Every structure is written in C-alpha cells, then in structure tokens.
Amino acid sequence: MLPPELPPLPALTRAEAELIDRYLEVVDLVGRINPAHAEHTYGGLRAAQALVGRATALRDALALMHRRGESEVHAATLAQALRVLDGERRTGRVGVPPSASQ
Image 1 (cartoon, rainbow, N blue to C red):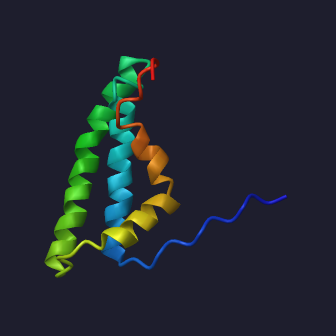
Image 2: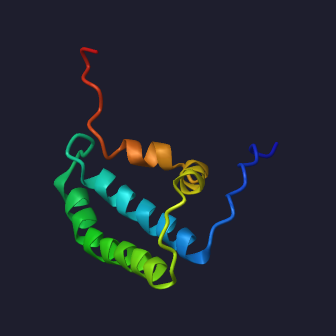
C-alpha cells in the first residue's frame, strides 16, 4: 500500500522556493540548538557551526528576491508551502515546550 499523497506545493517563483528551502534549513538547525530539546552539546555545537552558512544562504535568497523586484512576500502562499513541507512540526522544535504541569 502506498502512503497518502501529499498536497501539491503552491506555485512559487524560483526565488520563493529558494527562500522556503533556506528558511527551513535555518529552522532545523535552530531546533537542534534549542536547549529545551537538546540531549547533548555536540549536536548543538555542530548545528551552531552550520547555522552561519545557512543564515548567509537565507540572506542571499532574500537579497536575490529584492534585486529581482520581488518586494512583496505572499505570506498565505508561502505558509501553504511551509505546511506541505512539514514546517509546522519543524518550527515546533524552535520554541519552548509546554511545562509538564499544564
């Protein structure tokens, strides 16, 4: 049996797709660094080292959009793309988990 098919990604410009990809890479690394979710310092250290390069790539993706005249961010479309790419779970690791007493 095949797994359920994911919904299609919305139509994105190449620059928007690059922005989403680089953003999620940064989010994944920050989630690995988050002390509320970490188990070992080494994994956080490696993620922090990689973060510099990924943040630079994210900046470059935004700069490219700006140079191309893509001055508006279509938040609803990009949010849909993030949902399709499991962005809700991935960004969940960035925040502080609810306390056990709640």
